[in-house]
Amino acid sequence: MSAKVSDSIVQFLDGWAWFRALPADLQSLTLETATEQHAEPGDYIAREGMPSTYWYGLLQGYLQMYVVGSDGSETTLYCLREGEWGGDGSLLKKEMRRYDLRALTTAHICCIPVQTFDTLRHASIPFNHYLTEIMNARMGAFVTMLVASRLLKPEVRVARGLLMVAKDRHEGFQALAVSQHELSLICGLSRQRVNVALGEFKRRGLVSIEANKGMLFVDVQRLRVYVLTEGQAGFESS
Image (cartoon, rainbow, N blue to C red; front, side):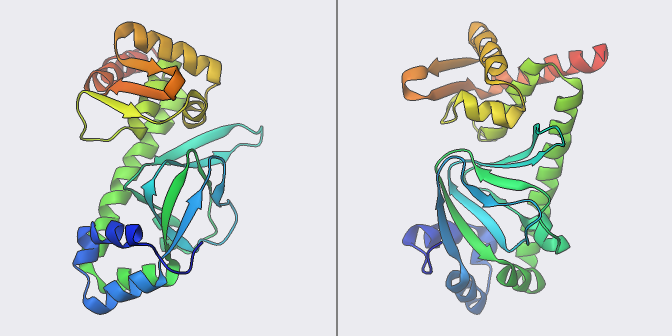
C-alpha cells in the first residue's frame, strides 16, 4: 500500500455523497489516512482469522468474498464490483475476519483504516445511512447465493453469478471482463460446468462470447427474466 493517495483516489472519494456531506475536518482526515492498493488476480486482500483493519472501496476490478469448507470447497459470499465498498460488517462487529477476500481480476482499491471508519460512523449521519443501504443490499445478495447453492440448478447459479458482477441498472448487452475460471470461482462450480451453462445461454441469445478478448457480453434484462422463471421452476420442483 502506498502512503499517499493518488488523484484517482481523491476523485473516487469525492464521487460519494456521504464524503461530500462530511465537514472539512473529516474530509481531510479521510484523505490523510486513506491508502491505496493494487492487486493482481489471486492476490489476497484480507484473510480469514486475521484482524479487520480496513474498509475497502473498489475503483477497478472484482474482489471475491468467500469461505472454504472442511473439504476444501469454496463458497462465494459476495463479489465486490467496481464502485462498491466492503468489509464494513467485520469492522462494525470488531471481530476477526470470517472470510477470505481476494482479487479475481486486476484491482485498484481504496483502503480506509478502522480508526477513521469508526470516527466517521460516530460523527456522520449520511455515512451511517450509506452503511445501512449497502449492508441491506449485501444481505439480500447473501440470501440469494445461499438459495442458489442449495436449491437451484447449475445454469441458474451461473446466471446469478453473471448478474452479481453486472451493473445493476444496466439494460441491454453489457460487457463483463470476467473469465470462465473467475466465474467458476464465483458460482462454486467447475469450469467445465460453467462452460456448458454458457453454451446454453449462447444458444438462447442471453450471452455472446469473444474468447480471443476474454470478454462476455450479457443481455442483463433477459438474463434477469431467465433467473426469475427458471429459479421459480427450481423451487417448485425441489
